Amino acid sequence: ETGVTQTPRHLVMGMTNKKSLKCEQHLGHNAMYWYKQSAKKPLELMFVYNFKEQTENNSVPSRFSPECPNSSHLFLHLHTLQPEDSALYLCASSQDRRVRTQYFGPGTRLTVL
Amino acid sequence: GQQVMQIPQYQHVQEGEDFTTYCNSSTTLSNIQWYKQRPGGHPVFLIQLVKSGEVKKQKRLTFQFGEAKKNSSLHITATQTTDVGTYFCAGDFGNEKLTFGTGTRLTIIP
Image (cartoon, rainbow over the protein chains, first blue to last red):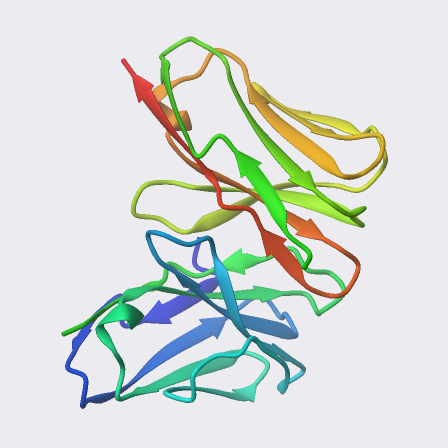
């Protein structure tokens, strides 16, 4: 299953660091998503991009900044995170916003110290 | 808000026993999807149900969509150790957003 790749797979960062998560999809899809998965909550949708345009931001704190330069790549820029931001960050893609079957990447396990 | 409730949260079964997880929505769904996440893995799409009363089978897995399109179930017959993982439903309310259930974590006792 290499349709959606994510790097890095694991990341440990301090609260003052700046880092970026990268996602790439090789499925020819037009919609890409960022999700947060933590132990005590269900999958939380963070951002949605459709044809490179951000179409949804689910009240995500500004310390998370997404970037979608083209339909195949999605980034999540992180700065001044809090320990409660530690979670598995999953990228997904779908054909477009109407055909929403999600193809997930392996995720980045983020630990904020 | 549009929520999808999923029960049970955890299920421990003896290998060979059956397993069922249920999803319920307070409002009518356009369709519902099911995903499986293995331990340490990521969610993987299993199936989508669209029609009222629809039943689909994948080997030992049986998926049902309620007549009112407000509930769905996943039933596994004669569980095997490879069935271990968390099963999520995801409801599509027709507003271009999937809402995931909280998941049911299945563990198998050999």
